Image 1 (cartoon, one colour):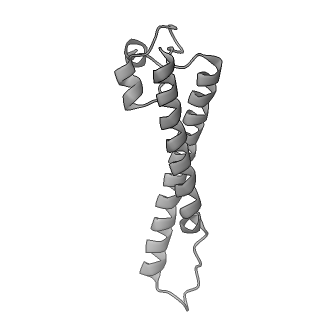
Image 2 (cartoon, helix red, strand yellow):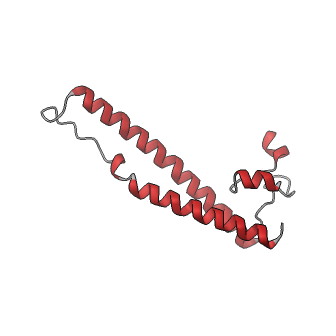
Image 3 (cartoon, helix red, strand yellow):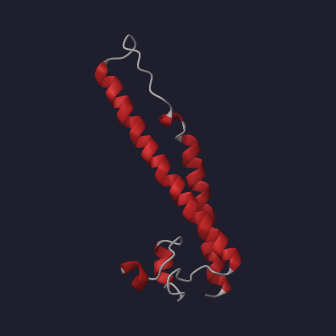
Length: 112
């Protein structure tokens, strides 16, 4: 993979990382514990709040996992392992990396 592609993927990964960190900061309030004071809200409102909290936590977990994948990809860029399949060591197709710059396997190994 040439230097131009590496720079482009690094830029994409850093932009994604920034957006995810911003979203995590913005949604921190949605993950706070739900107050279960019956005198202040009804049962259905509490159930809605609990459901919203669960969805926010699930979204937070997905975002944190994505940050880990991005961190790994950025590390591979520094060590010149970026774009190589973890299993067979062959280059990962550019189209596949363009779709998801954090992938670690070529199509053949991913299908196994």
